[in-house]
Length: 111
Image (cartoon, rainbow, N blue to C red; front, side, top):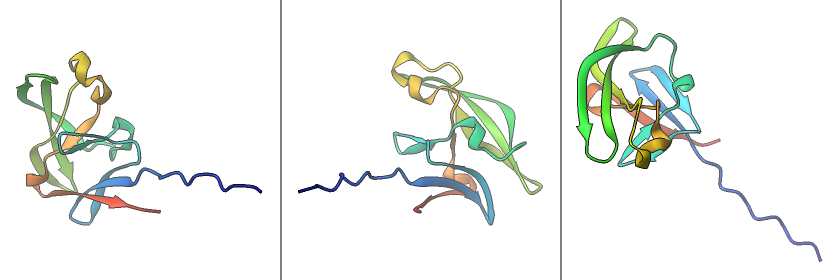
């Protein structure tokens, strides 16, 4: 008697929105400490501009912040990334997370 193959649980697509504008979408985010980190190629082109702000996380390393430009609105320090994270955080190297207090919201989308 044949048995059914186990159902694989697909990772949801996570999207970052500002108002009605999708600024990032990926099913390859890394969820770490309450934040989804998006691969750079999942971001809306031209979205980010570098900020001077840096912060230090004791185990991830130095975070570099970015301003987001969405439909003519500038969102200061709305995103951050770890270009050179510590070895413990290597999974998020170059990925981008969003500060939800800036009006950016995250939504899970299921197929």
